[in-house]
Image (cartoon, rainbow, N blue to C red; front, side, top):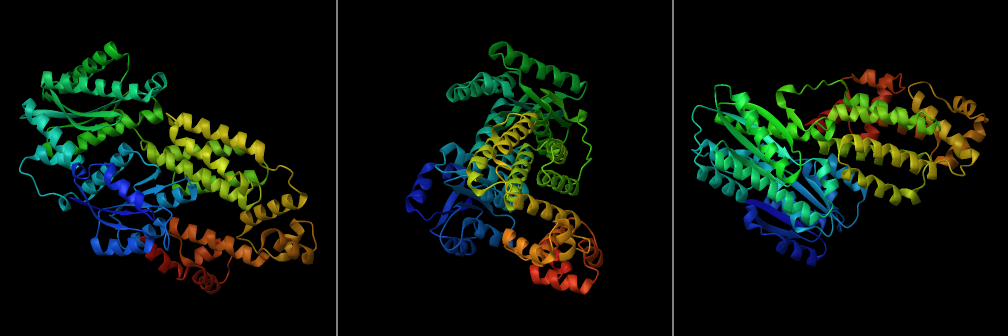
Length: 523
């Protein structure tokens, strides 16, 4: 069984979580509870749990602090966070340290159940032999590998009940899911649930009746099948069966199923791969809105890198700092890079867009273009990103909400001094690798050096030299972690002619030499 620890500083919450779901049916056991972060960390060391369900904000150590500390030595344990509000700095940190889920209180029964099942599946896929013994029956092993314990037994028993002939057959993965227009047409959630159940039940009954396939995994929005066909002309036969299923569903429910057709194989041991390729094809619908997708037809060209994303994001911020009307174009280009980086992975694409939007507010707030009192309104708008039905809708939503928000809130009644400091900071951001002196920056601001020094300190809270060093060190650590530059190349890239001075300053900021820091972060 999977070991779970519950953590919250309110005993009534822990009591409610214990009763909310049937833990036995999830093949899980609650082994400990904690009322604060320090106690949680101690319990983790004592019980070595598989899954932590924790409040974000707790006394002594926050849930995120515990996550960071645990990640120093353990990359396997799964964290599911609960929070009373959608604080996006927390979400961003949770994503960075690979938290499994971030759920808002009060959490629903099905929401928590799905989060736990997802964590268990991830644990099984990454370390399968740690959670069950080898099975003599290969089919049973595959069912067990990709399902929770309770679901695996039901689906495997159903497979055996059908009595399908599997010898000398070709297995093809197929994933049927519901299109976006289904949810637009059917607004009532109870009706959505009823129709989903009916449609997927009909698919299951069809393959059972025809004895040509079986359900290998059920999910809230999809039914994942393995279809079987004799080797001769198996492609044509399989696609005929798929069209028969699609036609039957459309005839009765007027729903055109999104259909992902994965790889085919004669090897039982490749069933997991067959299933995953079909699932991947189905999820491409979010990006291309094509209802029928074959894995063999999918071509993905990696045109962009994370370095391209970082550079384009800097251009986006720079366009805002310059009050340049070209920012919508820069935003379009940034969103296009995100799509290329995460094509096929909706969750990753959404998260990247959310983190980009949150970073944008932080940077514009730092430059006094946006004020802190507008943050809650902004965060609410960012939260709606997860409700878009396609990546195209997500892009259009981001562009519209940013345009509306900035029109109402940016550069409103900004004094001349604020505009000047924006320009100065932008200049530093672009020219930090050069020999920037107080005199040079005074010229940029059209001030005498003495007044500029006082002006800069008043507007930023830092003296010019400290601010420049902060910028250089921030850029240095980014280059260090995203390139293979040598220490002397790093020093030059951020404006240091003397490598020793650069190394000393880097150690002062980050507690280690550049090479030592990089090694510790990647170990």
